[in-house]
Length: 393
Image 1 (cartoon, rainbow, N blue to C red):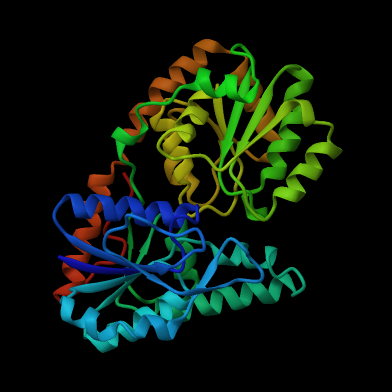
Image 2: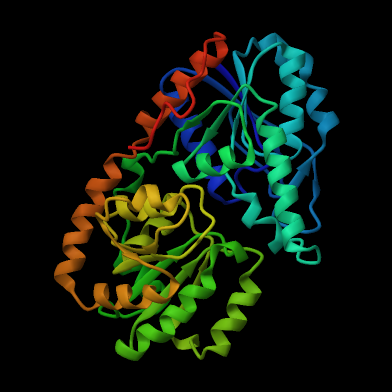
């Protein structure tokens, strides 16, 4: 098949959407399909890329990590894209990409599929805090319903997101197709080397968190958790890997809680090397986000055999539903109890590590790509799409 993807974000911008797109593109191209991506150009440049059309973009005032593509520059490529003979368009984000994707779909006479990656109802007010929260939620619901009902099929990564969109009034058929992981990419990692680089002793009880440092990620809860953990395990530490708009707030809160000796900030890490080292350095991976539509970092940690301590809210419920490889906290306050339980029991760590690797095997990139291809086939041939026909592992 020939697939045209379009997104308002992609690497070098690091987030779950970029990872999801890269994972599906990699697997689909491995299987011989032609996948072209339209994405913003970033100031850092993008050398050595194949089948990616970078569009000139502008700075986004409220989120300096992101860029806004120039819609006219996308449509300027319409004639050359039409000559490529694409079977369908897959839109990954609801901003310029959504509107350009619809316009290209009409121009090229092909169907449009859209993935709903982000729970915007619980996201936008963090960045537009000067507007009433209830009003922002109403706007997010209205726009989500409108946009989802404009396309031919909607892809969601979890049951929870499908339920929410149904509640919004989305009528377009939805298919639950999570992002998988390439198991071979999560088979290495040198935890001892990472601890050495970060100045952490080899026997220090260590928890790790990986993700964008954003307000909606609920990292505050992890810092408060560490206050309680250190009352029982005084030498316990936490590594926070990533960066983002909430970093200043998180650093200030770390100081206010007196946690400077216990926290290490690692910044963004190379997904092929130092990120794996970071995961493997931890006795456990901790997570508290309440807005995840899936929670890919949980799968990445589990694939590397790192036990998880997390709440199970929204999309993370699907990954943690069996309880294998993880200690599931009832709420934010229960995180500390579960973390202490894990750090205090080496045998439990070993048991959960084995379970985590086995659990992650069910979320393979080839399996998820096969599900996506089945949906593409139905949509491109005008067949009826059975809503929610593709479930989680």
